[in-house]
Length: 110
Length: 342
Image 1: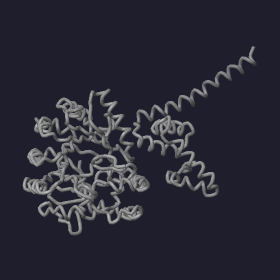
Image 2 (image 1 turned 120 degrees about the horizontal axis):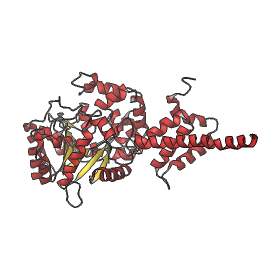
Image 3 (image 1 turned 60 degrees about the horizontal axis):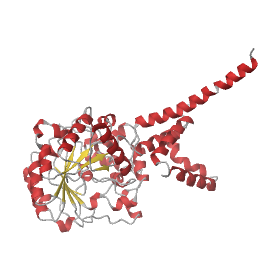
Image 4 (image 1 turned 90 degrees about the horizontal axis):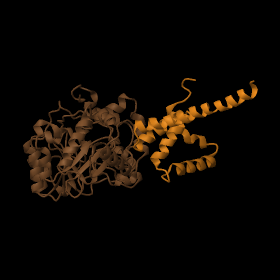
């Protein structure tokens, strides 16, 4: 699947609204509102987005929120820690399911 | 190494203009038309920015001047006298001395003394490390004695980013110089000695909001190094000279230009510094700004082109020369020698 994702596609994201413009408009408005300064700063929201981008492994989001995080004044130390948070949750989520494995093993074992 | 010293094609202003002139983006003039800012003219001259030469003790990777230790272009005493004569006859309140490292010009201290004698506010665009050179002994005391505002470049509050842009060891020298400035009273509340820092992105991205990154600098420089300052100004990297070379070499040029063009801000455009600044080159040629100066785009029309012919009435109404590079000053919150605009 090499070449499946193309950097130049990201600016074409709005094309997805061509066959559902009202849904795209609602999504765009909501998206903008989500990232506006609120109880969390724009910079904090960018770091969350960057972490989630890694968790969902979206290359477009990783590019977009790496640039955005730098433009909000974050540095690589902070951004790397954010990625580790995502990885810790992903890894922890797998590991904690080990309890399901243990429960199952106990249930069927002598 | 400067682009000139390695005979890089982008050392030529004509080659830079050729690259910038590719028709991939909307002409800047059309962007101005769309927000009814044409004809784009000066609104006054509040600042006389004098570039006294390209000699510098650093070779920063983004430098729009292509300055460095190998550059020899320096404003002569004769041209410096013409600048002071122009100032004496015109009510321009601020003199902004830049370079290169302006302090390395042998006429720097004389120019400061004379401008202050005329009662003008004087700003020194300082790279900080120059203050530590043995040949510059007593410079901080001199600046303080003449109440010169120091605008010090510090692209980030951490060593890694600063050294990546400005050279190995520059951050440590910058911190040492800032401590000396603080010790002399610079940046201290109520001292009247202004120490303002300048942030610029270490890469192909726009600056963060000025207030936000200023708060980071204030907290981190105080906590890590005990350093205080007055204000932080954010400046966008302009797509010219060494930063243009970086953009092209790393394949970032088109994306960066898209970023600048898409972030065009009419409010920032209305207040760009060229509308209230006049820039003087090391040889006395007049420009709308330091960036036009580096692209060899002097003032045009009926305005005099050399400081010897300075005429406030003509220059104050001059039409400003623009190009694709001007998107650098109008993107996002805008950018100027005094930081964000909108």
